[in-house]
Image 1 (cartoon, one colour):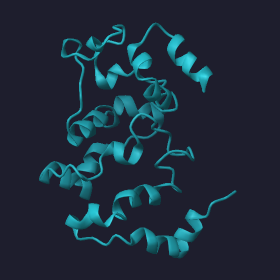
Image 2 (image 1 turned 60 degrees about the vertical axis):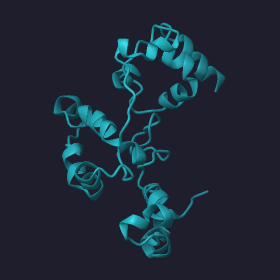
Image 3 (image 1 turned 60 degrees about the horizontal axis):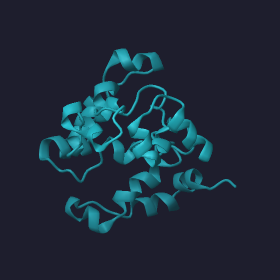
Image 4 (image 1 turned 90 degrees about the horizontal axis):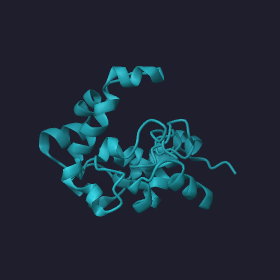
Length: 182
């Protein structure tokens, strides 16, 4: 852990993002995005300034105030064939999200409680879908969905059952998928 922090701090020119936000920088070092772009690609700012001024509007710092902003930010790359085709797959996730139940509620009904990109994929530690520690690794998906969908209080306005994970866990597919291999 100490070695990783030292690498993050000293492997490249001084970067105030890494210095001031070491915990997030460590998480980001495990992300699929780590080798592709730096913090300022999403957040703006000036990583060469070692004061809070680095996060000023003067340097184009962006603070995300809504889930819609985050979804649109992710879509900047994930809906761009030039950026995505080099990975062997291209699906316009933004268009698909817009017609999903979550997307309809967010973009047509302004419901900020629904799941957006970071709710299911993570924020800074976004791992590849075939990584067992990824939130979207197939064996992890039911539990990720259950974080919201099993919460009666959180789901009360949606008039849907909150026992789906329980039922899934007890069924043959859930039993096979959720078995912990030690």
